[in-house]
Image (cartoon, rainbow, N blue to C red; front, side, top):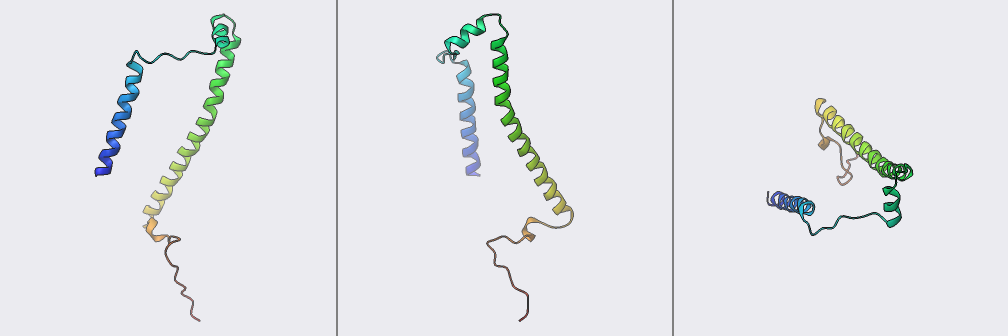
Length: 106
């Protein structure tokens, strides 16, 4: 229980620091490189197109990894439910640490 309180405390501290970073006036807003800033100030559509292509390139790997992780979690839960439905548990599967008994008679 003590470890759980420690995690909760650190999560609370991180959340407060994260929120404070948005409210604080001491943090300056990041600006783009001078050429990108100048290009975005014009009415040309090319800079926006580049911006959107960069956003899509950043989003695709995250979406793929997130999708695979969600699928693995779903498969794991389905397997655990199937084992529990059939009266089996994960304890019934021998681990690599436990010695395997040889039941063959010599």
